[in-house]
Image (cartoon, rainbow, N blue to C red; front, top):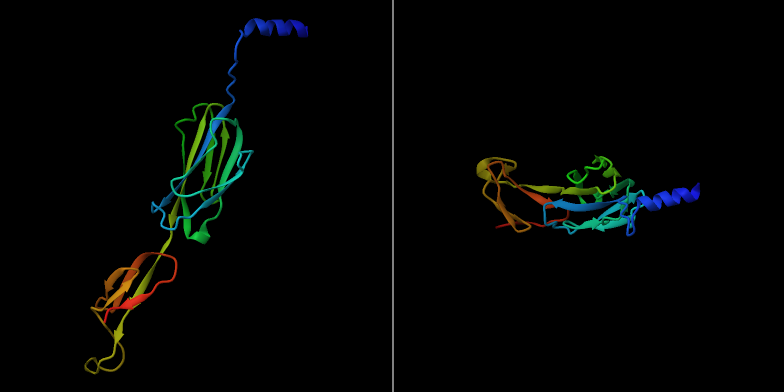
Length: 191
């Protein structure tokens, strides 16, 4: 009966190539805010489920495209914690327009992970967005003047420069420069 099954199969399938589509496509993209990324940080990723390469790095505007030859199955991609580089993962967005064959996708920004069950002929296209965390420098200027009485008094109208930005103290003697990448800065008073 094994021979007759072969004969029946032979009668059903004509000569030539048989296209059995059991693969899909996976694309992982990186975006930073601001873009372009002033720090030029490389973000690391680790995969589960057999994607090759299992680890990779991406900078702003780059993508890892596994191509259309990824076997249908369960996978996950996790972004390494970039907190040392002052970035916060703010979004994982996966385009569902090419998942009509039953692919399911779950994103979790808290664990920095996208997991999915890839169906044949579907495409998983996910973008990880990280926002650069910045700081500020508050400057306070006091003065001593006999006409103002004893002690320190707020000094308005004094200019300071930080990283090429010039600010002037207000009536309280305060000025602020924000949007600074974490690091060390010189504050210069204009005399």
